[in-house]
Image 1 (cartoon, rainbow, N blue to C red):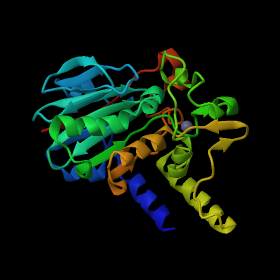
Image 2 (cartoon, rainbow, N blue to C red):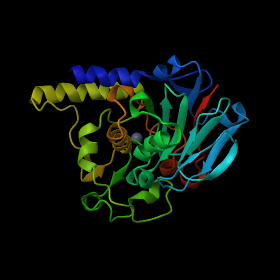
Image 3 (cartoon, protein in one colour):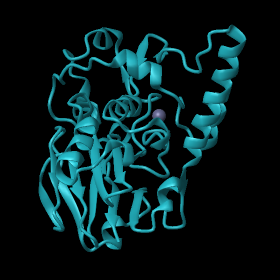
Image 4 (cartoon, rainbow, N blue to C red):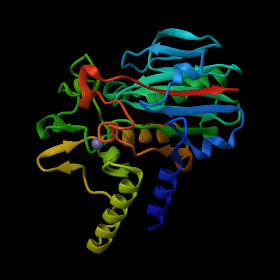
Length: 288
Ligand SMILES: [Zn+2]
């Protein structure tokens, strides 16, 4: 049950404030930092005149914003360490990740959809911070924001069995078929936690239930493999978490929202739910 308690603490890290923006309590320890994961009811561009963004291309390309505002270029992670600057990514089911170097006061905003995740964008972004700023991964805090949950990211068994050879990415705002190989599916399963992201409370209750069930069965695992009937569900957040760990970020400094954008229509845009009508959510980090 010790692990369950840890996961619960992490879930509790996220809360929605009066501006309809999700914040991470642990990141509020840094007075120099501005950060947040916008909902559909928040006007992030209206809050920040100097927002820097990317033309997102589902890649592993990381770009330094260098104190600039506006559209910086093509890529999927924006790096910044200039005081007064704010970087952002836009998502509607893809996973937004904010990286914070607590020592060097540097940040990155990462857009991790299916293809970007498969291309290793989260791991690459930590490396890019090291190359650009000299970041030590041990100083990095990582917040994995709202995105499509394991509950809703469903693929057929034949596709799951052949990761890397099916066109799985198309439904999460990805125009390109045939994503690259996704070798760590097993590892992602093992690291996944949280379950259906109906709400924070439901997620916690669900996890507790699973833990109690597995304790009864003596399996010692809070989560079974993500199979729902004959469909396999993929946990993109868990895969990104695995990549962050691989890059050297410590487990206790990775905070996951466990909020599913498709389930929670009141808070979030979702490409899978709303298709072409879907708007985009802004996730941002900056330096005061
Ligand atoms: Zn869902």
